[in-house]
Length: 251
Image (cartoon, rainbow, N blue to C red; front, side, top):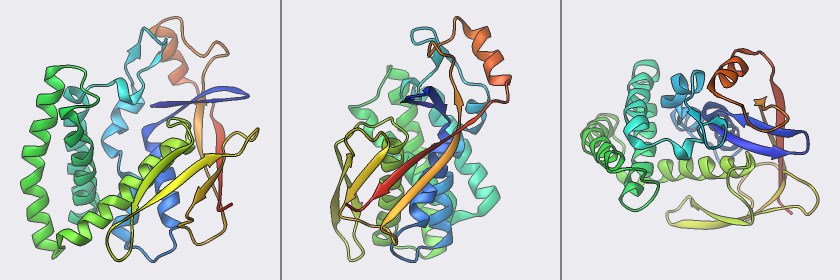
């Protein structure tokens, strides 16, 4: 779960909704992309689905835990389970890309985002157990490393861009995206002055000159936090949702 501050108050955006926005971005790409790649971009956080239904409570913030504050000892097994679900639901290609995206995350645990030694061990276990599966799926599908590197890079790019559009990453910020012929290009994202959640991205990678992405989120109480876990659980049981949007333009 992540949180976006806006004029109307704070909203809580699920990992699955953030991933859905990643999929919206990928589907607007100025290139015909394969269906497995599009689906993997949209479902890359599948492993979080059960946690989002019943998130843990962060006593410090008075909110559900921000996804960055949940250690790999908890979410690495969830991620592996999400890969298994993807394999059962959609097959090897989607599962392979979701698994590799987890690898992108867990390769960083040697020096970033480590909450405890158990998290480092969980990240390493993920890499050691998923690696052979990924290799076997790639061989069965006839996918070479160059293609997989590009597809994984596209998923990683829209994942990061979606985090910015959802308010988790602050602008200005630069991202890297894979180019068609190999290599990477740096894209710069800035927010328009006095126009929250209206962004300019350059160079422009999408088919149209303007793109609006949107999703549903849960509004937090006016105070932006809950008095205790029981209050958070009551909030989770409520049906209220709000729509949020972000606008992207080429200039």
